[in-house]
Structure formats: C-alpha cells, structure tokens
Amino acid sequence: MLKETEKEFLKGYDQSKYERPSVTADSVTLTVRRGERRSFRYDPENKLRLLLIRRKNHPYKGCWALPGGFLEPGESIEECVLRELYEETGAKPSALFPLGMYSKPGRDPRGWIISEAFVTVIRGDTEVRGGDDAEDARWFDVSFFKDGNGRRKFRLEDGETVITPDEGESDSLAFDHARIISDALSMIAERVRHGGHIYEFLPDKFTFAELQASYEALTGETEQSSNFRRKMSAQVEPTGQFTSGSGHRPAELYRRKDKETDI
Image (tube, rainbow, N blue to C red; front, top):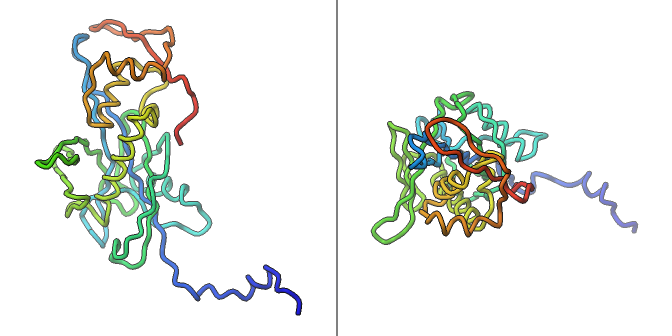
C-alpha cells in the first residue's frame, strides 16, 4: 500500500473535528505626555497615559475597554491590532510589541474567544476620537501607588472618571482588560528598568531630564539625578546640540547609542 501524501491527507482532513475559538487582538496603547516647563529650576512632570475606548455595543456596553476586535480572514494578528486601533481611535503607533495571549475560559460572555494582546506606543500628544464600534476614545493618566500590604497598584484618571482595579479586576473595565493592562504596565516597567523600550517613548534627541522623567513615569519610581545619570550614561551619547528657547537654560541633547528598535 502506497503511503498517503500530505496533499491527500489534507484533502480528506475534517476541520470540524475540533471546535475552533474566535480570535481577537487588543492594544494597550501608551504614551508619555510632557508637562510644561515653567522655570529652568524645575523640570516638568511627565505623565504616562493609556488610551481607552467606551464600548458602543453589548457586551459591556458603556464600559471602558482596550481598543481591539476580531481577526479577519487573510490578515495577521499584528495587522488586526493596528487596524482595530485606527478604526476605533484614529491613532497610529510608532512601535508595537507583543504582550501575550489571554485564553481563560469565560473571559468573554459571547463564547470561546481568545485574545492576543500587544503594547503599542504613541510618541507625543495625539488627538483621538471614537469610531467604528467605539462610542468614545480618551487618554487616561496612569499613576502608581502601594496598598496597605505594599503591593504595587495603578490608577487611571481622565478628569471625569477614576478607575482603580483591584487584583487585576475592575467593574469599570470590560472583559479581562484590567488584567491585561496590569500585565502590560508591569512588563514595561521591568523592561525600562533594564534599559529596554524607554527610547520608544522619546524623540530621537532628548535631554537627560526628559530621559529621567520618562523613566519615572513608566516605572512609577523616583530616581536621584546623579544616580540615574550614572546608570544610563552607557546607553546614550551627546549630540553636540542644545535646547533653545527663552525662560530656561539650554540643556544638552542626547541620543541612544544603539539605534536598533525594541520591537
């Protein structure tokens, strides 16, 4: 008897033998907003911000959620997350890197749906607007704090709404998005501490004060300027250029030594 070829095997293969889940992609979209410099004596505070959409339809109608949606035939999961992000918010990221897959049974009341989550980065201030099945889209400021047991937690605020997830859960956020956001913020903070991803949030040329302010916004930790400069000096190099403008002293501009991206 002749051995069955792969082509013959695939021709007779029954795809209905195993039930297949639907697949979605979700985007934890982050930016670091630079505050105004009011004096050369004080560096402006940087704010880490997270982009959320308000769901227009059930399930979780009216709840805040991460931009995202279903994978369409013929597209990759990366193409899906970028398409959904643009359709729902109008945002186009400058960097994209994977976070992980979320497949806990019951995570979506519509059925067996697994999601691949990504962190996407927006450089600078970007106006967003709700589109497609998003009723609204807004930037939320992210702040970190420790509870009575010393556990690191985060808070989301946009001036009207305050969201403080507990143990990766929140009634204000749809699906398991509180858990996804928590995982993303932890991953980013850990990688920034080890020299990765921070440069995705900065312009090509930046001051040491901007570098430190972004570091502190992303990690939620305060650093002594002299210690921080020693820690990061091996990663950056001076450009020979300085900031310009009235009201403050010129500061030297630096750039990353390694031009390769973290994607």
